[in-house]
Image (tube, rainbow, N blue to C red; front, side):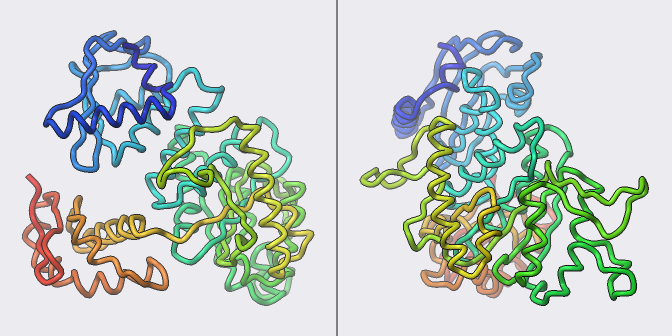
Amino acid sequence: MEFSQFCACGPSGYALLKQRVDTCAGLGRSYEFDCCRLPEGCRPPQAQLGFWRDGKDYLLYFRPAVSYRGEDPLLRDFFQQGAVRRFDGFQAMTDCLRALDSTALPGDSLLRRLMAEFRSQVVGQDQAVEAASFKLWSHICKRAPIRPLSLIFYGPTGVGKSELAKAVAPTLNRCLGQQRYQLVWTELNTFTEPHSVYRLTGAPPGYVGYDDPPVLEAVRRCPHTVFMFDELDKAHPEVLKTFMSILDEGRSTARREDAQGRRELDFRRCVLLFTTNTDLSSHGVRLGFAVPAGAEPGARLHLPTPAGLAGRLYQADESARRALARSGVLREIAGRFGGLIGFQPLDEQARTAVTIRQIAALGREYGLDITQVAPELARALTPREAISPRSTVPMLEGVLTPVFLSGAPLAERRVPLQLTGTLEQIRLVPLS
């Protein structure tokens, strides 16, 4: 058996693998392949490959441990993780394996890795993650782009739009293996007056704010800047007009010269991300790798051809653009964005997963390492009705603060913890 066969496996192959692993887990054993031949550069050249399910987690292991001395950075990163790899669900494991597929199109492993990285950070938005990954991949593969990548993330509040946008720069840096991108975050809800445009471009001499560094000049420090502009719909039209030449030509003129006497700002290798809570999906807009009507709940498609996906995204983009223009954004601006990506309301499973992450983050504020939350307790702590997932944080803090304070001795010991029990009696338990 070749290890590469697992990486190039299609959807039906992975479905069969999951079935076999789950069946073996029910019998208390792992699913193993003896004498699995490993990629060139591995020592030893073959090993036992095993799969094991531990609750919702899936483990992949080699016996004996494998080292890699080849030149492929993805394989080097994979085998440096140790003899045992733990994944948060079967999908995460298959995404990791797909990223190692040497038979994929050139650069396709980068696309798959972007998808896997974003999916691990943003809960319940697989379609948006896949569409954004494809757009980012298309842009960074260009050798001589003529304009920046510009995307609008739209959808209800608190469903992951800003979270995905903030993850773009660090994720690109990890996937590319270098610190190339920086993030500049701007709240457009403070740009409601025509004169606020000067905070983007720089104020003229004699005006208030002339000495303040304008937002857009960050590109002088880093030509690969990821600009995040939150709440696009709150900005004054004069502010949005500032972006027209940037989105269309990849350039604009600064108020002041740089050290070399130049005024031109070059945005061609930048990424501009805009978020809005405006609903642009009322006319059937669906973005990403949509599951066709009649498919099983949770069913997923294999990666389509770039040409097929590009055509699908184009149709969805145009529908969302028309909705954006109807919402009041100038038509000439709406037509310049490179893509419009919709985020869906979170289902119960995704909201519960968000609650678990919020509990872990709140625990860290108290010095606690909460690595597990009992599923029944997580569901009980997730309100059925809430304005947004963000609104649950104060409730969690009120309920859990006494529990976390009682766990102060555990914080001193720095041990991983599980939050368990019932709403009436919540407990922190050290994990063995």
